[in-house]
Image 1 (cartoon, rainbow, N blue to C red):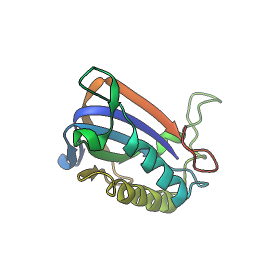
Image 2: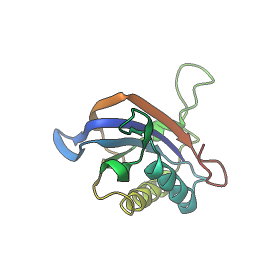
Image 3: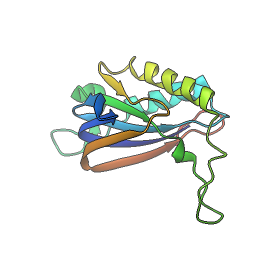
Image 4: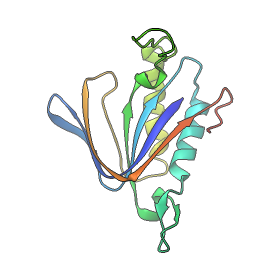
Length: 152
């Protein structure tokens, strides 16, 4: 499982011009799943992301978590995180998860995030989405789970 986490002041996702997910201060998460990913991997990814301490405290140190600041989450599926660009100029997506399994893991991940955070918005799996955000910092992290689901 791969995730790009952006600390944001605001983010929303639109499908066919309609806002289907929107948050204030928190994390915009682009999430991709591989065929080898499991619910255990999604559990560990959600736990790691929701406990990240990347909001500033009163001393300007990145020391606070989503829970500490009342933050929100917007999760957007993005199979292109598994693009392989080694050969030629057209990316290959063979490492991305099969859509049915990836969709299940996406929904499972969203459900796990709801255990940590009151407001979790999401995109629509497989849809053509337009994402808007105001990045805070900017502060962007890339996380990847290994074959044991451990995030790094």
